Structures are given as structure tokens and as C-alpha cells.
Length: 243
Image (cartoon, rainbow, N blue to C red; front, side, top):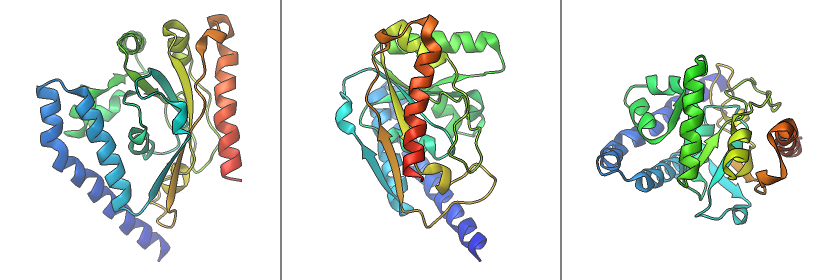
């Protein structure tokens, strides 16, 4: 019975997610046609907020005061669920995702994702380098980025993060952009990456913004310390909130 309810809730949520996307396609198209990235970001935020409202989940963003809406940041959230990419856009600061190229294989959705964000094929060294350069260029132009430092989803129904990649930390040191740890506290439970279905009884989804970290306190030779500091902040918050 429970699995049937979860299956039905997942189906409903999927219809809502893609239904809203279809309704927004003309507006995303206008954003591409007239080169309006800020408008596209606003659409993403509206899409995310309306999606969670319609599936009955309250989103809570803590510590917004840490962010300057006109600032340039590298956001580094934990990554346990597909829902992470639907929650991050509700941040008050516009950004581009740096994500796997496989997302672009999703019909229509993938096309728009590629237009507005930065993709990487992690299997190809040349592509990883090109993506790094594009990301650094975007930061220098004033765009914030969201990069999942684990490089993908590695945990299944767990709150223990995987090993962090060096990319976002190198970018922060190279460009001077502050790095912001982000704790996504509930997606691992609402939609675990275990082949099952949405947990319909979880009614709150929390995004915790940690204090921005000035990369000038670190050097490339001390990048491991930078990684450990960020990972510990996120992991400790996950442990506290899910105890």
C-alpha cells in the first residue's frame, strides 16, 4: 500500500515538474532569443518554488543574510538526490549550474539546460579542462556558479558525502570568488537515489546557507585543507539535522 502511494506521488510530482516546464518553454525560448540570462534565472526560481508548492512541500532557506544578491559566489552543496537541482534555484542569488553532460540527453529539457548552464563530460580530460576554463570565465564576468563538489550522486539513502573534487576550490583560489557551503538537508529522504519512490510524508525541504569562505586564506598547495573545511561544515550540519 505504501509503495503504491509513493508510486502515485512520484507520478503526480513528475507530471507537475514537466508540466510546468512545458508551460514555461515559450518564456525560456524568449530568454534564449533575446539573450536574457537574468530572466531565465527568474523563470528557474519561479519553476522551483511553484513545483514544491504544488506537491505540498514547504521550502525553507536559512541564513539568506550571508549573501549579497549582487555578489559572485561558488555554491557547493551536498548531492544525494535528483531533487537537488530543483531546490538550488530558489537561492536569492542567480547562478549557472556546472553539471554532467548527460543531462543534455533529456529531450527538450536538455537543450535549454545546455543553453543556460555549463556542462562537463568527466570521462574526457580535454572536456574537463574546457569546462574549467568556461567556469573561470563565467566567474570573472560576475556569474555565480553551483558545483556539486562530490561530482555526482554517490550515496544511496544516506547522509554521508563522497570525496570532494578539487575543481570548485581551484576556481575560488584562482578567481577570488567566495565559496559558499550549502547543506541540502532533506532531499536524500524525500527522493533517495535508490530506485524507489518519493517519500510523500516529508513536508519540509531545508536549504542551509553557510557563511561564505574567502579563498585568499588558502593556496593551491593547501587545497586539501580547503576541501576538508568545506566538507566538514556540510557534513556536521547534515549530521545535526538528521540525528
